[in-house]
Length: 201
Image (cartoon, rainbow, N blue to C red):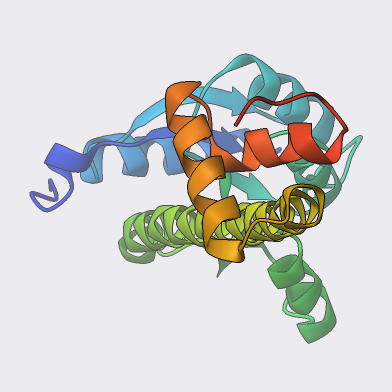
């Protein structure tokens, strides 16, 4: 059985499961049924970290309760440096454990025994959610930078108005023109003015 919906959106996956038979079944389902490529495998938390560091992947599918290092702890250690879409697997039906999993930077989870029909969709939804989060984070960063830039420009305009007795419009136009001439941003030029550098306007 092949899923035609996924063939043209093949993902690179890492599968982490300490039970070898379960791991093989997961790999087989992901590759044969859903057309994804499993590029890395691990059987414990330390191996999970090592494989994540070494291999570039789109999604990591991992058991929470791993030997040597808990799966959630391994994921946290890795994502402190680099984010990745993650799907957690657990036989634990404890709501507190599941709540913790949801807060630990995962985008999906499955309760064991894993239903092969759910595995593919959960992996794809996790990847889509992850990309949405990345996009929102990027937009927030841009907005933050934009607000910071605006504040810096406003302060620099104030300095120029006091120093040269210019109107606000004059100070803005001079900054804008100088930034274009110097092929830099107004925010960068404003920073230089606030740092006390001699900037020709």
